[in-house]
Image (cartoon, rainbow, N blue to C red):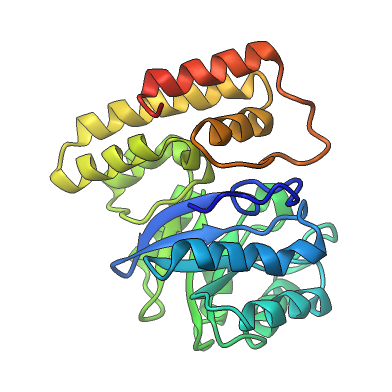
Length: 276
């Protein structure tokens, strides 16, 4: 994972978070460009990710915005970079209907030749995607997948395939062990950026069929996340990334500075997990 430039104030991961998953047999990194990133740093941030990844895995970049015009500005920048795909959420702030959301996703997909993924994130956008909406986009050639923390939605997509070369990725970290029992093999969550050794062990345990070890590891990781939440998850996450050797501020610029006690607890958590 690349080091975060210090002037990318408010960046979490390179932008918001670095998620790891495997899609169609390829390891991927998802760089999520959230609303904390200055417009002037969007392009440089993508370049930093491209230079760090060096084609060792697929690189997807978030380009969500609240209008087609603003999305196009981002996608024009993405089109100039050697990335593998873009990720889009439904528009947010204004509540709208399913038809408008499908129209938004169809039109934004047409603005790029990159592979196009959709992020179902109701907590942020206030809009919930469903299987019917995805099916309406089945004819979009570059529509390649969806990410969601809704376990039943992901299972529904898997059980009712509507498009070839399409991947459903689960992002509900508290339910990763249950999702494995469901038969879901593609999973992704930004919090694991600060627990790389442990999420690698989880994947190895799943791959070897050692479900109990994976479940135990995930339980320990979720306990650490919950302890970090007490002191402010973004400030604690940022400090954890710094302890792992990634420079910069990974929290929104309005977040309070992590207290000394929060630093002590966060460092103890990473030591306990064997990350440092």
